[in-house]
Length: 115
Length: 108
Image 1: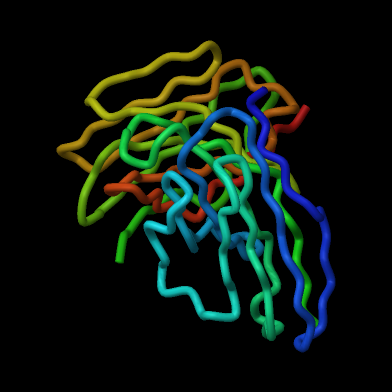
Image 2 (image 1 turned 120 degrees about the horizontal axis):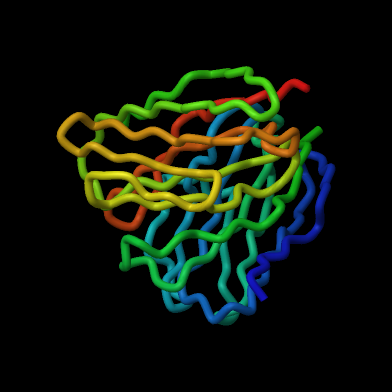
């Protein structure tokens, strides 16, 4: 199983809502990532978890709150978002964050629209 | 910031060959990845280069020259399903920095 799954596929939320994005992998990977991708732009790294601990936060606003409940799951909690936060949110995983050759496997993403 | 450049768009005919160039100026280098991304889908891994030279995988090949800060992805015997965005990504420590992507359109 080389699949990373993400739910929901689409999400529309108001600026006062609280919602969560979920990501799951069963490849035994110990590094998991959140990326944000705007239309016709490359993915931009937001967070990296290694062995269930947050190791990189790319100066992401606090209205985005990541959580790694266990080695297979990664959540992104959303609160008080702005319309400019509308984007495709991609989750990825790799065997380890330290080994340079380990490719990242991406999920299909959640298309988020903030109204 | 990191500077990773690739052409915005390329068009080629079915059965032909297309070469997508990527140049980079980055603060570090731990390898270069190529990913394919179809519209609305996840990026999928194509190749990884860390040493100079050519890596071949079926119809896809990738080349790296570290001294020139240059890589290319070669797609041979193009098929309609190869129409997609191709992303060049440089690994720096634990992070991947992506280029803006090259949209390849394959015409019959």
